[in-house]
Length: 319
Image (cartoon, rainbow, N blue to C red; front, side):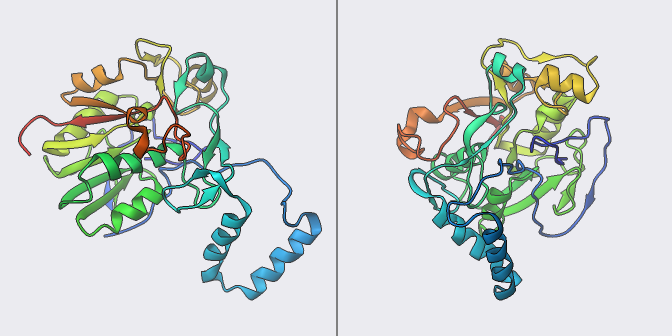
């Protein structure tokens, strides 16, 4: 379902392509996360030709299987500080990498989760702000890790996928349209799975790529068990009361100008919870700042997006 583009955000098939096939029993997927991009910087430890010589020497003496560990250790030292902390890798950090689009429409419409953020991406493990908020919510505000559940993770975020797929109580299923390293390849407007298959569905920053998002919501509701719940995050404008979409805008450039990214087809607005309710969900909106002690406190230790909300959409019925 997701691929990559120059902004590091997801890219969805917008032509109505459908289909699915089973890939494997288990698998990783990096399609649900932004590409970490950062400007060129001189290392504070070594720089220029000396750095290149050091890197070449380290490659000769460190076996390939140990290089990720060595790289993470180096970055923990290089970016060590007390300003921020990553809940995934536990690193104390002096800063994070910037991420997001600087398209004017995202600033003008005050789009939460879509614009430029100066401290977004963990320099050690690559987690990004939206993923950290989702993980903290699941950890502190849900019972996901305390009882047996069947979970569908659409366009899975890499670090969260790693934790969920290794949790003994979770029967984990990853899904995507384009990524090869997921368990099921599918189009969420036509999910080839039985009704009431899952207790929990995570589908984040996907719907803004889908032309027929109401059909996708209907499919997600169908495969969710009665009483089950889902988290369906999207970028949301705080300036718009009603979701903006224009299906006459079909070119990548036109979509970038209108919606802030070349594969988005709308900008969701303050009516997003009503759109979820209209699809048949019971909606709860969680504001993490109201429980800041579990989410980094007033200093925003985990560098979350202050205005971001968690949209929990439940299927009516008994659990």
